[in-house]
Length: 395
Image (cartoon, rainbow, N blue to C red; front, side):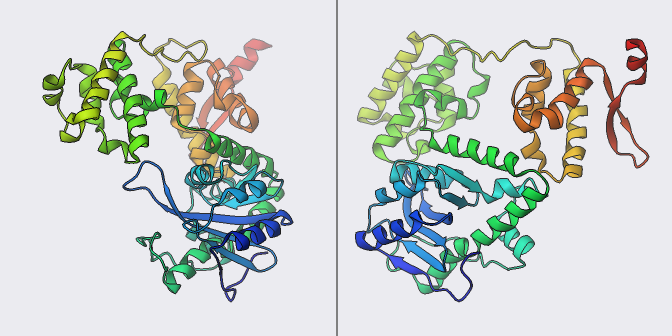
């Protein structure tokens, strides 16, 4: 169980007080964690607050503007379970602040997807699991202001106040449904992604419009995007403030040779034309023109028949209904990209591994092999069932 509504959060803004918290966490089987940060005007998130709750009746607000969070690494890397809701951004913040991420992560948003919720907010879980209305009115708070008003501190504390109770309820439901290991495996994948640092040479794949580029333009896009990423990190500003996506793709399609040509590229503004930025950008363009184009990913044998589209559409319909019957978030069970990959690459990918393989991968493979078919049941629902004609032929 976690702290109740009467518990007042403890403000921690000294190294001594933080050391005491770390010692207490070392003995806790689990603790809840949340962070508040800003990154609208920076490349790196600016951590402004860390909220913790743990037994017995401990509710803590740590001021990262006053203390170094490095000592937290010890408990994050211990066997203690760290409970976070929608952890992806919190993991990045923790990695930058402490040098590590939780060894044992329980993401309540992921876990809830296995018991009937679809990408739920924290407020939805408070209502659905605990019948508690969570106040989420102060979304535009400037968390870097000091001192923070009392009502803002209370708002921040509520994000972790009942999170261990939610964890307890979810574990009970997942255990009863024999899905706890599924949820934990997905949480571990999330943890692994959070531990990764960004590779600047892969940044071009996230650029809007760059996915259509092939050959030399793709090589230029990769080089310029990597330069943009490093430049943004160096200046600690958002990448869009270095160079916009439209300008990057335009440069890749028609690489400029000098500053005069660069100034004429669609989407390039004055920030990219000044001093070191212009020089670095043109050097990145030249390097991209000399580099080998990015290799297109090869992910196993591909089906070449013309019926991939209908197969994907049919399987998507069945999986959507099946996920509803199983009370699993559809996107957690399989995305359309997962289905397309499975169909196109003859049963490979995420649906061919782990808990998804037995649940959906094998039935889908039976359909693709012709030993099963989709049909409507009496309620007009879609069912996947063995093909009688195929079974007769096999006899």
